[in-house]
Amino acid sequence: QGLLNTWPLSAVQGRMTSRQPAVRLSQRRLLGVFALFICHVLTFGNGKLFAIPAKADHRRPQQSARAVAATLSEVPVSNAQLSQEDETRLRMNTGLPSNNFYAVTTEADLAELLDKVAKTGQLLVVDYYAPWCRACQKLLRYVQKIARDERFSNVEFASVDFERAGDLCRSRSVDKLPTMEIFRGQDLKRRWSGANTKRFLERLEDEMEAVPEEAVTS
Image (cartoon, rainbow, N blue to C red; front, side, top):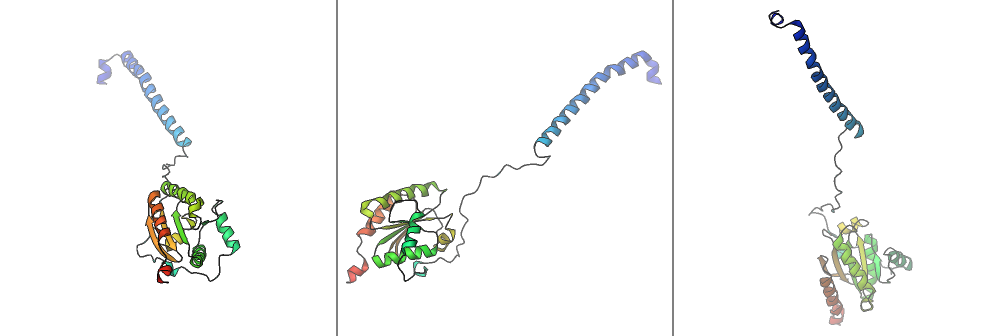
């Protein structure tokens, strides 16, 4: 009653009326913000929060240090020669025209090749790689080039794709890619990791020049 007595009624009504547009403007702004929020929620999955897809992790799973590694002597070796059917199958898997390059996916495949080179006294080069590994691809292309070279026509070459032959890689304790192995017959002569093409060629040539133990003892 005190305030109304000090202000004319018309003045009070005018003051209240002057505030109404400001209040309505604030309400409209709040409604606009709320409407934008609702549209945003409806657009992106009905209010669910989407995590940014994590980049696929292509690294090989870590192998336990206690995993039992199959040594060369533990690889089962058959008494039969590599059959024509198996030889054709292994060569076709490489997609290469070379007659001395094979694609190995199982321990049985590796055993067959080891059996073959054991009877002929040839060298066998095994390249463990992964298709997503750039260094592996670089070395693999070089190995394929060497396999087609006439100077190395008496050497057998094999590639092992980790994606297709993970069990074989683990049984051979391959914990780095690329990994190379050079066998003479069934004897593992050299094993190392890395994509250095010069080092690969030097070690292959060294093994080609080395005199087999049978020749020394005889």
